[in-house]
Image (tube, rainbow, N blue to C red):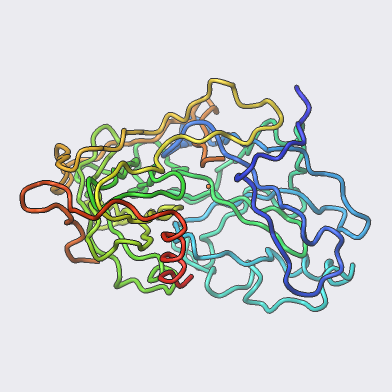
Length: 417
């Protein structure tokens, strides 16, 4: 296997900057999160065939050279399966266990132990009911704190190997956790892993494939949202939008309906035409799947869409490269999840844009042969939600888009998060 290149891929890493007191020499260095690749959308693990899910990951470069004041198990990866999705602003606690914090305190990396609400194992907000109905069972560790994965080419080559035996059936969001005190890093794997037992249906699942990165769209012709859905025949879909500021505030009443697409062959697409009131604002999307038994799954987009005035081509749904410094990902790799070309005409009218879904197929790739994984992440209510077209179907006259500097100033003035 080729050794890792130590060239960082711009824009694919997150830099954690400490604004408080800490003694660790690596406080301000970049924390490395894995990139996810392979089959996208919904990966189905049928335990009647094989209970093991194998999920591909890649790293931009090896990161295993510790400073003398770091913990010996620093710069390692842990993975978790969550029984529900959350808005991107819902940050998981910085610490997984109080033991990790205690060891960091003993090593003088931190000055005091965190509050119990800042630790995943004891934070009330994350002790949610899992698919088995048990309290506190929503978050399932895939590898334990004592088995965290070193960030090296050899250790990450096989990706995530998750034995789902004993795990409650249902859909799961996979999160990675880079342990590197005192600032640790969470990242989200795009798509879902859906654990099933033969023909027994564990409930619906839906995931948003596009936007894939921070996106822009215009009032016209709008942005095509894509994704995958699985569930019983008769499962319905609803695409909603809300201003990013309201999502950050946790205002669930801010969500409005954008479209109710029909899923075909396990995938969907829906045109989101933003109302004029959203110009120069950022919005997030979510998709709600409801099956005939009343069970639901809510999927949140990882990235925002900034609305610009007038007419222009939307951006943010294209595939991105994978940050792979180990040569694991094939050069010709392209994520297989649904992609559509964004419309350019202001009178664009997609077929079957609205209406209730009569049927949704299982959009997951079965991992009975142990080979399915996720798509690259670029490496990451009620009410009328559509509108924007003039009565004659033409573009609004907006005088053209503003300069980039003006747009930045306007967004900074309007956004509260």
